[in-house]
Image (cartoon, rainbow, N blue to C red; front, top):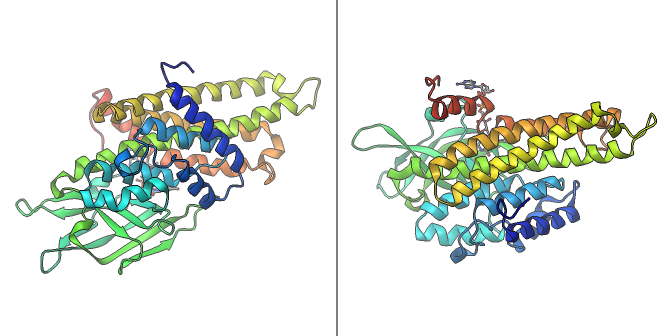
Length: 379
Ligand SMILES: Cc1cc2nc3c(=O)[nH]c(=O)nc-3n(C[C@H](O)[C@H](O)[C@H](O)COP(=O)(O)OP(=O)(O)OC[C@H]3O[C@@H](n4cnc5c(N)ncnc54)[C@H](O)[C@@H]3O)c2cc1C
């Protein structure tokens, strides 16, 4: 890759993270890798230096996740903790929130989950009903609602919850974000039994009149939507990094196998029916990465609107490339593709996550049809 696309500094970061990933590998211990990556400055690489971060951006953070994923040891909570929560607090949090959370998110001693999805709203986040009202003396908040599929609530010190407050003037509900510490009374979680082999679990949350102090509202009550969007572009860029890393991991396993496995005169990789789909998977992963780099560059340059379109496209392309690469990798290994020993079959389920979350393939196509192509809005 030329220096025009990626600086020498970022290439060095890529190589260093790849070396860390190689030391941990597929059977990694999540907590150990999390703290080692944090100590090396990788988890907070996007956070401001003044609060213990590396002063970089999404370009750097996405490199970290992609390289760990390509070594078989992705850290899913990177999508949430430094990328969404760290970004929102760094850009919009009060000085006290920045001092309380950012150094810990950067050095890995604090982790934050993110909860927007609700059972009755799903892809239509305009329908979320988790509502915050002022408590009797007007100093704090009472939060009530339900969330579903929220990752890592058990290992996170707090969850950044997207809710709504009522506009005192108009009565309409406007989005706002609250930091809810894990052990707050009324904040209940139950694990969802997922068909996913990952250490990060998903939870259903019930917020049963959760009482929060005034300072748990992030930033400004009137800037909620802006804050939310600031967090969602990093989430999409990081989901792309997650998918590209996983796709590269599976592809490398398949290439390795196709080079050595021989049942006719040539190794199986000498048959174009095996080689060409792997070459296509490689091309599609590279293309997705290029779009991810574009999205990260726009985001880091402060172009939130341009980054929005590119981040959606990157997430779409990366998820599709990942699903295809994993599918082809499993097929390349024949029967071994389905054994525990080779560990590829479980990626079939894992790869689908990037197609569904945080925004589904169809919702991105809806967005591009309407926003990019100007077709009538269908949703
Ligand atoms: C492993 C995993 C981890 C997750 N982690 C988190 C997390 O940490 N925090 C969080 O907030 N959420 C999380 N989610 C939730 C995720 O963001 C949602 O699953 C996703 O937004 C889709 O919502 P839904 O599941 O309700 O699907 P639905 O909205 O019910 O959609 C179902 C299907 O219908 C399609 N569809 C819906 N509307 C339209 C339309 N208008 N046009 C065309 N097709 C449409 C969708 O594309 C999809 O294929 C996670 C999900 C998974 C699977």
